[in-house]
Image 1 (cartoon, rainbow, N blue to C red):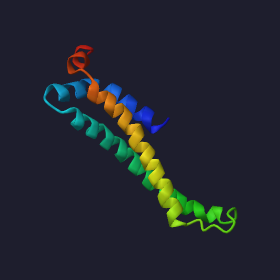
Image 2 (cartoon, one colour):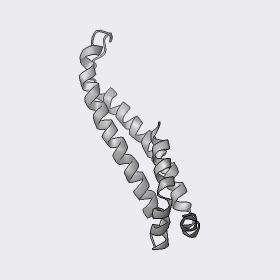
Image 3 (cartoon, rainbow, N blue to C red):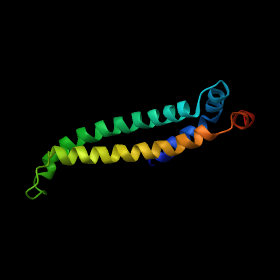
Image 4 (cartoon, rainbow, N blue to C red):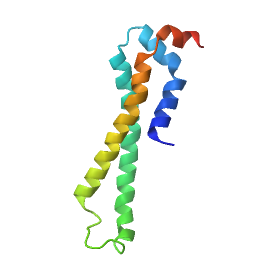
Length: 110
């Protein structure tokens, strides 16, 4: 399951809450920011765990790599930034959908 699916499912489960926030005056930008922030917290935690595991795994990869330093900071940084960039996009798409919802329709479904 990807981050997009997790965030999209979270937004679907929280339609009523988001509808109430919008009905009480939250701007669409506030809703987008809330959803993206939660997605980035998940992605940041995953990136931290992934970097820690990558540092541990370098001991096993040394024999497989030829003329490449397994602790190459540029490679680790670029891979982390690429994944965090993908996480921003994966979080923004459900956030955009949540910000466009009609609060009345969201509340009447319950």
